[in-house]
Image (cartoon, rainbow, N blue to C red; front, top):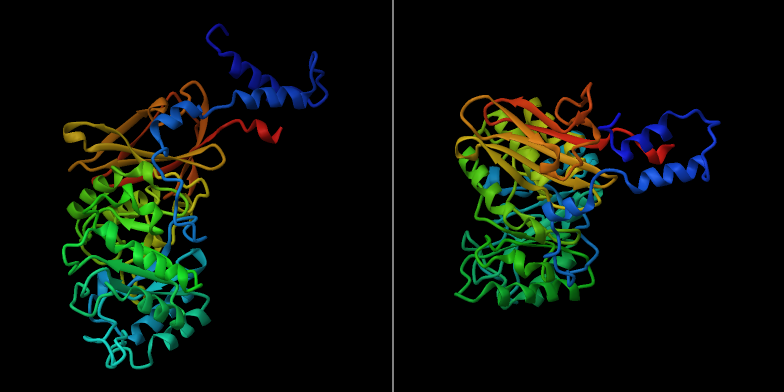
Length: 431
């Protein structure tokens, strides 16, 4: 017994003692409270590993984005081949598949929805060939499904596909979006006339706020001017990277770039490493599971980028993993990050992030070209190595048979990502 800590002895005493046990100088409840005060998850270690002190106190504060946004966006699969029928059918599919019930509630139209020039009153116009019913009618339909409609514009003279941009038209365009019932604006960065992003993005923030309608403001500035440093005062999310492609290299490169800004994200404003490519065919199922796991852990927006009307069962299984989604939507709102790299080129990685309820999400990510064993010491991720933790496997949907003490590891396949939640094995709060 010489090697057992006082904390462990106290916890065991409280947990194992019969209900009638009399505690010298204290009640059972008082003893439990004393154990609770020295319970695991050391806050100092967590603060060092998952620092959020950079996150600004002057946030947009429009009541939105308390957790990262979830939904669907048209660009990754459809690009400019988009029309109102696709939007309506996508809204239907989000509901019929149950994805809407899991939180995917934004239906976002990307570029190419508008006509190639403004109208007689200098207003934006929907393309009459592809959106003949107008955006207001489409918004009404989406709202009737219990979902929200998003739209796209650009903080430049033109959009990236050379449709009219909103630069110097912010007030009129914001008022128009609000009158249509739009709930979300993705605001791009093309044809920006060389004007700094810090000058071009706040006017649309002010214009949206002045409409009186709550509209989620998503800055798509591509990370060129380090938006994590300033965009928390401007938008609800900000792109930290260029556009994602449906490849392993693009996805991993973008994850690394977004990781740099982890300490700036939090409720009300999120780092955005771009939309999901899950289901578009350019990666393996293991790579897509890794993509979804890391995006969820990083508190990235979960915006589906495939055709949800025609998903495979494997794609649906990934996108509908409720336990992984709950990590992304956890109320604590701390972005997980890379905490450990091992092996040749650092391809054996450990990413982690705190969750509410004294829990910790951990991913073991194999970026090597062969199956490997990935092992970590619990203190590496901020846990107390002398304490036991229950471990939940979020892809197998099962709690592992043995508790983790001191170290933890697993064999991980090529480009696979295993995801777990660590919880103190003895819950003194329930005593």
